[in-house]
Length: 412
Length: 146
Figure 1: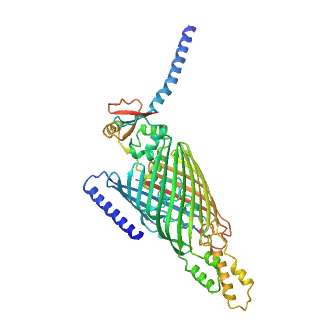
Figure 2 (figure 1 turned 90 degrees about the vertical axis):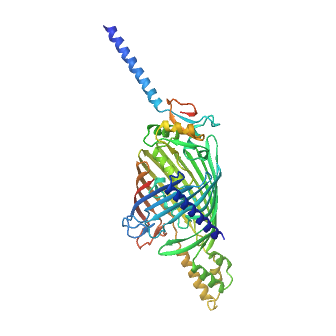
Figure 3 (figure 1 turned 60 degrees about the vertical axis):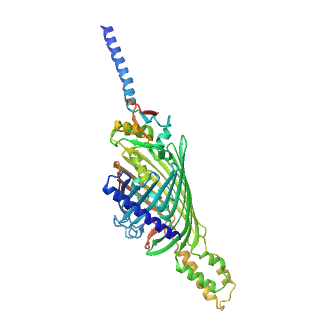
């Protein structure tokens, strides 16, 4: 029902934008705006024993380069339509409309958006593709590259603003749904978020900006192996805790807090995030933060960032092992249960444990307004017995690598 | 003779002192701006925080039509430094965030102070910044000075 409704909303927004575009073409309509952003990012790592978010020891331009176009049509003072399409050079990421929504402003301090929207998880989540908006070549991967964050959703977002003599604040709430896929280690896992919702509050006072948010989603992963194993275990007896732990769906809670200080000479910021699934056997709990700061030798900014993530799964219940301990090997269920424990051990061992520490030293040169060049060098430091956000790991890789990025960013 | 030298020296020192005193004042005067609004507005004054909120896409910006000058205009730099407190580059990247998330649109850019004043006279919700020595016509009021 929701999906059907969203199709109607999307069709209406596209028709409205088309109508406005034709007005623009035939007349000098002041209420139709075209904006664009783009980035060319070259990156590489210093080892051939792994990949890191699509980068290997060859210099790649395709992984994160993109071009975005935004069309905005103001129908009335209170109603406008926006579409934002992103064309990516990365074949693993789809080029698509990331934003397609109608904006309704019934009051000066209330904004409603309906349609397809970027999920406003963290401070830079909804502008992750607009590299010109932040100082790094890419924000800390531990937070912004977490593999099961939902980049967009289809639904409704309401923002209410309030300003005092010395501050400005906003309260934002959204609800919607999303489905997508996770690509990792040559495997694609489909997932669905039936109900995704969140609440965000911001406060700006003098040179400070504070942001705190809470997000929640009912996430279902499509992992047939979990269902198969769960079915097999149930055929050997009643093991409710283990069956529950193999459920491929869970409510996921996300907590975020961030602060940033800016002045003419320097800036500093930190952001802290906890991603906490209620069932932590298939999806891990992730605690991650970064601290960043920079000095402005206008037009060049030099910055330093430390980022860290800690990833933790729950162990599977021990009831299968307890049952085996009290069971004779001649019992017809014994072999099946034993193999089931091997299955659980295999799942435990193959889960990605993406704890990672990193230091990034970077420079941003604002050549002129709306055009910047960046260069970042990042030391990635993971634990040897974990995946540490690396992919396609070969034997002998010690989970340490240097990650180099150069980017050209523009908006117009 | 000595008296003449002393007198000349004293005069020179006095002139130098006056020059040194006046020069910063003259520079300081160039660094002053005032923010103007339509005289029909019910607004009497704005705090520096409110001006900043209006020019940085805060909640208050919905009630006003902020007007700015081109990037290369020296008064824009003065306004950025003395009122907003950020560099042009930082302001531009901040606006990229607001624009491409649909939160707000940047101030309207007009080519000169005269155009800005004329716009404020015509538009009841407009506000603009002008240099402190600008002679203002009827139809506009000063709501903030720095």
